[in-house]
Length: 466
Image: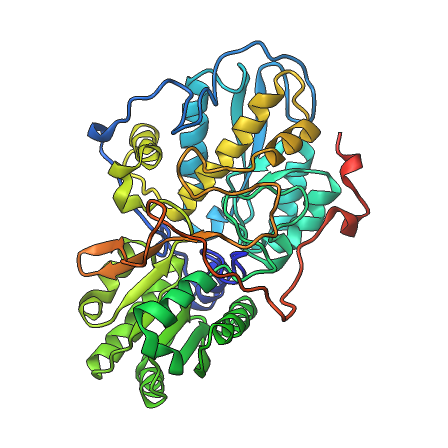
């Protein structure tokens, strides 16, 4: 999975979690591995209705008319949302769709057309069937994600359905055709090399002599581990530990902790579920072995990991690269992030604002801004071309700038959070542009870890988009 990411895509471990759940024979409530924050109504942000952050008049009344494309009428726009909620029991993408469409419609919709979220539950394994249904009814996909998204890309492209995902997972869907993604994650480049360079050369310069990778034994995680090993070696790391564990976890992490200790591992990159990492760290702490740093993966950026890791957080140094997304815990310093919290407090009270939700809100915004620009000429062709004109997209201030016309480009900025006993906090990592560090190193993969599906792969081209 490349959050490219799952080179390590963010929350790329939906597949890994799914494997664990199947083996355990149970579901999970909520998304314990996602960054969370809640808001109170007192944190309301005063903005012009329909404006978001520095984006003005995204949603507003208007006179747009005509059934200009599938899913578009004079009164509404039907937008599909892919989700694995029937299997994971994690409603965050449903919450996101409700919050965004409620806010936009309250402001007048897209040029007067109301947004209708058409939810397609994949039940995890039925992503092709869910996408087929979207192909038959929806104007576009927005704000969704599916663990097995790569299996349905050809289906989506065959029906020329544009996609504005909250998150991509499998290699086939990383920068696939007719896709607009709010985070810079070129599949040809390591999305974490700037972050790892900081850990190896500045934060803990002695750690490069012994770096380890520990991952759940699933094919998607193995690819992430291979990509990570290549990029880390490219930054001068000596890999002394590269092992896997059963994706369902183990009852006793002591043998793995002892192996890490015996290898003298100083820096550890982890791919798995937050509860698994917490259990490993508590075991390492109990045997008295302290690493210089542990890369938790963005999957751990949330309150659940803080609670589970307990005393280990005072002993081990835990970091998460949350890419170039403004951190939730610093929302009072950023109007756009605070506005998301306020909208959740109004339309989904008590529900968490996750890292995926922030990315997804930006994805919904791209869709809305692009659709608004088309007015009565709202077609898929106009929508897609309008989105590609966004060369400096920030989601109104939710992220560092992204050129949406260059999906296969390396990230220029990153943002690091540190897990502490008091919660996640911004790390001291040399931020030079607000909360981000920009102008970072670039590493282009030499190995072949998979390619995104293109229109040409299904016998189509942009000229087929009407």
